[in-house]
Image 1 (cartoon, one colour):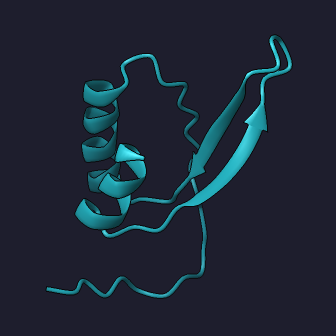
Image 2: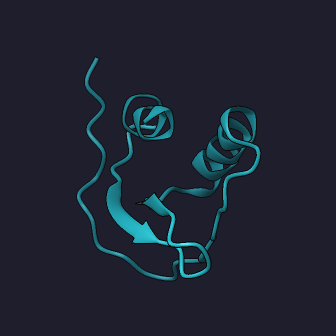
Length: 74
């Protein structure tokens, strides 16, 4: 919840949540998928290390995407 809140309110990015089940032990977890730029990536990784140092993180490079530009409400 705190990571999703950080994405939405601090980085002004969207996120998609998936329920995932670990094949090894059947543990149900929430998977968060988001796309951020390089500057936001550094901030996000620092935040994740602070709030959940054992978080499993997968990073992909995106070569092309289509999206609506961010509108930051003040």
